[in-house]
Image 1 (cartoon, rainbow over the protein chains, first blue to last red):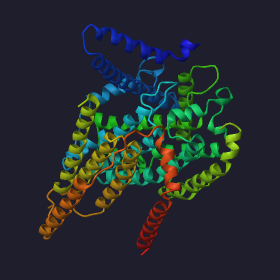
Image 2 (image 1 turned 90 degrees about the vertical axis):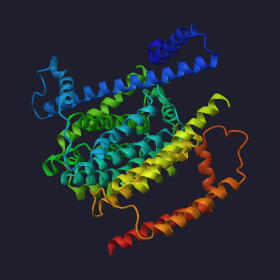
Image 3 (image 1 turned 60 degrees about the vertical axis):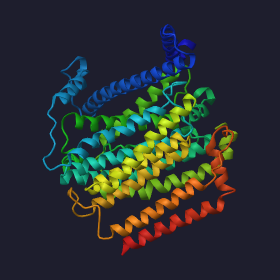
Image 4 (image 1 turned 120 degrees about the vertical axis):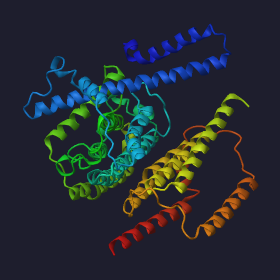
Length: 363
Length: 166
């Protein structure tokens, strides 16, 4: 059991030892060798996580399409591979060999820059996600704030994508995206405050550790009433932040073609698409960490619990996406400013007042 | 110099270069959006400098407030101007000589202060999580400045709403 629980941590230690053994023959100085090994290990971890995330996105795309088909009484992709499992792979190959078209009057530099900037926050956020016990790439004491801060960079990517295409639909989509992301960022951040209050730290690892009681079931979502309210508000505003239906106004294909992505094709479009799924995955991991106990849970190994929770949230998001029609712009803004923000603020007050009670029952 | 110190120095040089390059793009670009993007690059460079100085909290807040919020406002404001797609806007107007003089005076004043001040460096690193300590200080010793800043922001907010309603 212990071996299973620490599988990946032991693997990391084993690889590091192996590297030490290999580099020992080079006759380097002690600290130079240590520095070299840690540098290689950092690169290895980054590579593994990026590959893992791309794999996750391929699975998510397949899952999304199959799920959508199921909920709409269709079959979904079923030609490439068993149950259509290889469909995302085929799509990826198609995307790579597609022609990259840049509009003649576009600002070419900004047009190319936008997808890269849109990818940045997702990749930066992976740095602090605790995948399991001892499995966070970096544990910084401001993990929560880091996630919020880097997520705000993504808005710039979408916005300059809308501008750089020199297309009215792109610009409209970019404008909508910024208005939406800026509005929904506020309730999203406000719902993190009660959790930070209860833990007394912004480190994602500490937040995980704070939820380890009650045989691994002391999750903050059970801290009634603050936890459930915060979770629902967070999840809704996170869905809006990453722009999934019913909050997909920035794309709104029936109104503005494809919003900021209208003029993008080939792998540039693919990067936007990838960033969207990365962001969706990340908000689900953050929701799982903050409210659903992260890696904590009885019996199963920590990383299995974490992935199970994340996929549960992802399936919930897909369900919402498939069953709700798109909001109007005014409804969208009303929901953020007149419903979610006040609820989140009241929730912070409740958390502050209830803090002694939560402390006595173990939170 | 020891190895970590060299690394810190290299990090400082890189981040300072990023900040200065961003600033140069911001003042020399002939397209407003590109100028705004240069400004964002400069903000990122400053955040990097804070990281090099091991002030992670301020660095992340710099990204959150400047890169994530203020630059979005700048971009939005630029978006509402005319000649958005033009790439031949002049970075100067008729008052560039006066601006140059003011900028030079300000720069030399800042330089004098920066080099003339005896900066106090703490001998030991403060142990543990810094953010609770920071919060405590803001709520006790520095409560008055903290509240004054809140009031200032509130005034700006109300002012913006009043202007927007007219």
